Image (cartoon, rainbow, N blue to C red; front, side, top):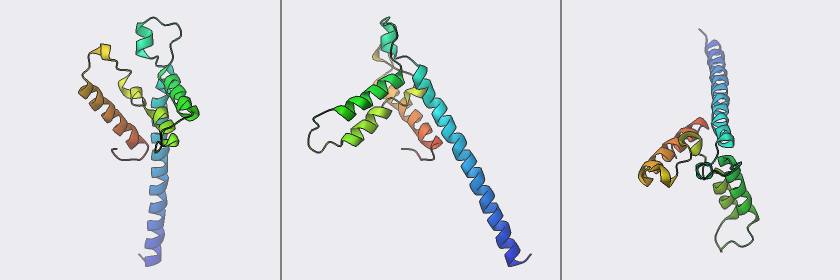
Length: 132
């Protein structure tokens, strides 16, 4: 086999690998978004337990917290508004996997943190990132 043929073959292999990676990446992004969709339909546990009519979903709560951070007038010096908004938007994202665990569930804080950390690691991997 000539060098030119080998390079062309390798080039084709690289293109196929890139296409497969892109397809895998798109599939992973869809899986991530599908997980996040559950936040729209999962009602906040505390409100449900208290019998609140039309309780907010986890996504409703995250969105509202993001807006609150966005429109807050006074931030102490050194506090980054953009970071606060981003944190507010994703602060409960692990609940897409672990659910809305409340103190009434009797799950120790360490266990809740472990579950949420594993969920976040899984979600980061879906987006092509490593473990946080």
